[in-house]
Image 1: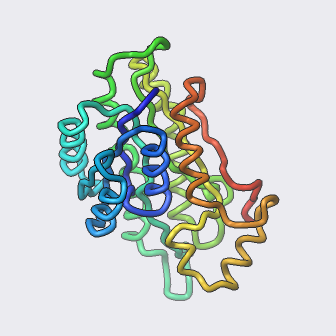
Image 2: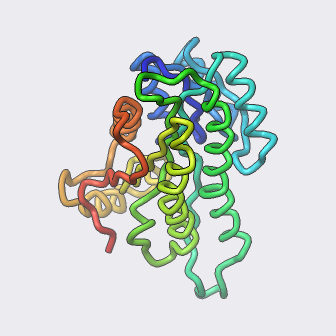
Length: 251
């Protein structure tokens, strides 16, 4: 898949921005979907004519459909969807302030899981009209899961449940879309230097960086972007989740 056009949710910062830079650096073009217009427009300006920004709420059907259709009108096709939009809410099932707020749990599921499905289904609807390559491939969808899907820690029931849902839908979605020649993969990152972790004190960052087996550091967003490019370029990757975590197993 050469010079692909990608929809990237959460594309204005963190892993989404790293994915956008990686795809553009390899000759692709991107439509950045995000709720942060300041960061989105700044990144689009940095990437030049290969990028466009569309303010988008991934939980809203009409918002994603409008962004997708605009991307199609600008670049002519959609080959890739990368789902990076997400939130991490820390709250125990029952804590010192009482039961986990139900609205917070629902919001985590809506953005991390429902939002990923919403972007994927609408992107796939556009991809099925692409001309197939020699293998019959028309597109690829890449979700962002998390190692928390497997080893969620205290205070992560909402986040772990949402990312576990992403893991769980990867294979059935790949099976659904195989007749259309659309692959589906997920990346489960470990501890990455995203804006969320960058805001922690140095001592906390050092403690987290000691947890992977090797290398003993937080992951670089550029490494996530490189994995996105690897999946795009590897047509035999399908229906699986790749842990990108330095061998970490969360305690």
